[in-house]
Length: 208
Image (spheres, rainbow, N blue to C red):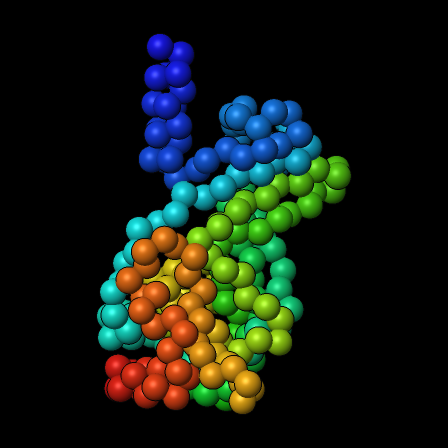
């Protein structure tokens, strides 16, 4: 009976989109309040976001639902606590190299916000939100972005979450595109390891 109750509790936590992870006061213990309050309770609070369902199956769908489609290079990033204190994002500075759709221009620097990150508080405590289905971007690496403007300040968010970012190779040794989605059975994995020239031809076609 106890095992059945534990299973039901786990399913409820997944349904609400938060799975408590390991922290300084016992991994399975639930904490209440904002992330700062949870960090105060556990010193190092860690939580994992539930993997969202895949929204798109084709590049054309991504393009149709994006205000901007650009190629850019990721620069430095910073983790930020949301205004309500309940979640964390990692905000990257991205220098634009090429625009397929929208009014952004080469040389512009924009902020692209991804889910998850680690925030340290003044009292020495910390809170971390993990998004394991979303491969984080690397500084100095070039990506293709399907974007929309965020409702949380002057920044952008990828369309379809992790589906909206693809790593673009920039050397002759590597010609294969890589998806940033770590979601199991993501429909857009069919574009993973596609030759970059063929991939960008498809992007150009759907961006019209």
